[in-house]
Amino acid sequence: MRRTFTTLGLLFAGFFAGALYLGIPKAHAGGPSAGGALLNGDANCNGTVDMSDAILMLNWLFLGGNRPCPLADPPHLVERVAELEVALAASQVELATALEERLSLSRELETSQAALERCVVAGKVNVIALDDCRRERDDGAALFGEIEAAVDVGCRTPADRERAFLALAGILGSERSGCTDPLAVNFDPCAAVDDGSCLALPIPDDFCSTGVNSESVLEEFRDDITGLEFVLLPGGWFQMGSSPDEPGHEGTEGPTHWVRVSPFLCSKFEITRQQWAAVMDEPLDPGWEGDLPVWVTFYDVQEFERRTGLSLPTEAQWEYACRAGTTGAFSGSGEIDEMGWYQGNSGGAWQPVGQKRPNQFGLFDVHGNAPEWCEDAFYQTFYDRADSLLWDPFLPSDLSGTHVVRGGHVREQAARCRSAARSGAEAEDHSGFRVVRPLRPYPPPPK
Image 1 (cartoon, one colour):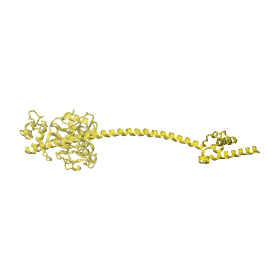
Image 2 (cartoon, rainbow, N blue to C red; image 1 turned 90 degrees about the vertical axis):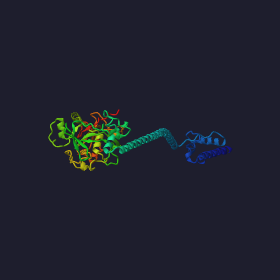
Image 3 (cartoon, rainbow, N blue to C red; image 1 turned 120 degrees about the horizontal axis):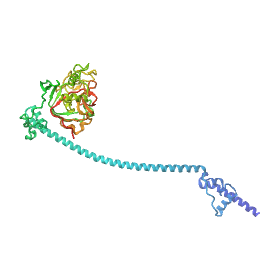
């Protein structure tokens, strides 16, 4: 009977231990998700649930035996852990990339800060240089004002005044043999020219005076060799180029700057086709009759110059002659329809020269009709260069280069016919032209 009660007690204890074991997940792990072994009762992890699992539990609970085997993770937790490990690895990669980008940005910031500091230093240097240039400009303007005031006081007539400036500049006085340096006579410009010994302009022998014109009371001449008519332009200071607020202004026309040109003879009209044929000893092509302007290449003009001893005007001479003392977009009356032929009134056809009004110097067709070659190379930013500020500025070039063309033509808008409008053309292109006879040689190219 005792054995029976003992056996029953062991069975009861076993069942109690098993129930207790099965209850551990709820009591200690918060529910079924704590582990698979606690849910299926396999305490010794041998793959089956039997009396040995109960004995192991009783031995652990009551006799201090070995603890049941470790809990096995359920499949969905294994997958979740794997996902988290992958995410962790990806985060580590992103973190490393972010750290590299931060380091790169930090280096770029340091470089930018250094560049900014250099720019600030350069800006300060430029401001200092600009201030120096302004001071020099103001000093030069003040000096010129003093000279001009002295001339106004000491010279009796406007003609004396102009001659005094010529002498001061050394354009006539010191360059003529036997003439006294005007700056060596007590700095009195009028005293330097009073005797008249240095004032006679070197007019070529083949130029004969034909009187003065009605527009500007300037003396006119006729070239006995070619029969061309010329006006003697006095030369002097003028403001070259145009300001941005002039309608039609283009960037190549600035900055405006003061230029001094020497006296020169300028042809009154554009060269006509008949005049061209006579000089070049060529038959007059059909349709070339009348006084239409010629249309030739820059190469062709070189032979014309060689045969006549005349030359194309420099760009400074051309604009001085075109402006004739004016400062607006158009000389003469200031109205393009009265002064020249352009897209708006020509019908796109060349017109006989001399049909529109002359400018204040008595020159015709300086606005429109045929475009006109100049002797200079065409350089878009020439006005920014120091040599554009010289007396009689001139930019020589290779014969085959790009050359200045001025005045606009019958197929262009009015804005392209302005006094300041500039353009360039290749030597093989065609254009019209007028000629000049300088009364002093062109200056040599700047070194």
